[in-house]
Length: 145
Image (cartoon, rainbow, N blue to C red):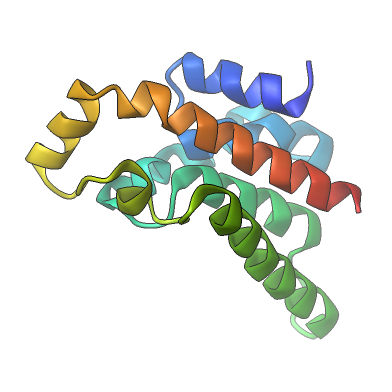
């Protein structure tokens, strides 16, 4: 199963968008899938506030796990992960119009009305899987480079 298939399967299994993207890469980057699912647990739906899309957050966690700084004086890794973060968000935005969840869905997930609107209009089942697939595809290409 490739990363896209795995992330979509996790999402269809009711894990959130961040969990689905992050966990689909975790094991090959040295993190147990169960731990990845737990780490990503609070990042879906733009951290439940419609902010940065959870699929993007999951992808950024992948990039951080692979390239992020872990030594105090490792300036090179800091600069690399910062650069990749910006690159990912720019690519995602150019493909999807935004990386902000509320803008992607066209409703305010900070409100009950917004959540109800998203559910009634099948946004979580029709739009969100496309964002999971897009984020997974972009980050997959970036870590191959």
